[in-house]
Amino acid sequence: MRVRATAATAALLLAALTACGGGNDGGDSASKPKAAASSKGPAEAKVDCMADDVSQADWMEYCSDEGAGTGGDGTEGQSTGLKFGESYTWPDGLKVSVVEAKKWTQFTNEDYAEDDPAYTEFRVKLKLTNGGESAVKLDDLSVIVEGATNGGEASTTGFATDSQPLEGRLAAGVTATKTDDNALETKYGTKIVVTVQRSSEDLGLEFPEFEGAITG
Image 1: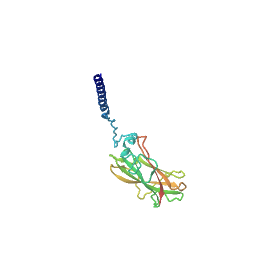
Image 2 (image 1 turned 120 degrees about the vertical axis):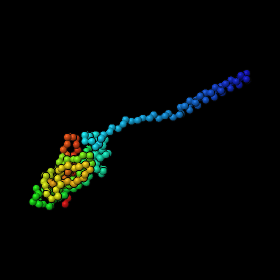
Image 3 (image 1 turned 30 degrees about the horizontal axis):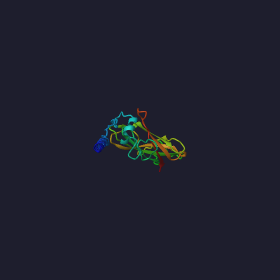
Image 4 (image 1 turned 45 degrees about the horizontal axis):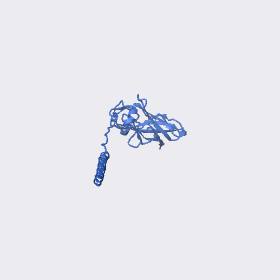
């Protein structure tokens, strides 16, 4: 009986050890990390940011980091609330900024205006850089000046001295300074908003607005 009991005990111990060994094998298998599944997202849409036919929507979505609405001065994608000296770039690469609006005092007989105390006559200076690949028609640009305090809109005039009107073409890679002459009733103050418009078949084209004051 003692031998049988010992054998039985040994059999039980062997079964227990076998069971433990099987559990370890399963645990090792379960503890092995699974290989991470590699995934590759869809390729990003590509847009030729310098193409003449790129839409405003595509430009804002895919090209804004390359210059749309910015001149490197932190105004990415912004067309309103710009300050004098800041810039805006259209989808074709034409960049515009308002340098200054300065009171005019050098009247001559060739001017279309005279020194009228009821008006503030002034000249707006625009800086234009053609960063595109083809010439740009400057005749397509126009300027509207509005009072920024209590309303009013400036009327267009012309001063002969050092005039550089928005005419002709601006070649690719060229920067030029152009002028636009205006007169605003003095009752509207000297704070103004200058809007630079551009003729285009793209109805979604932005017209940047620059805020500043008439100085001098």
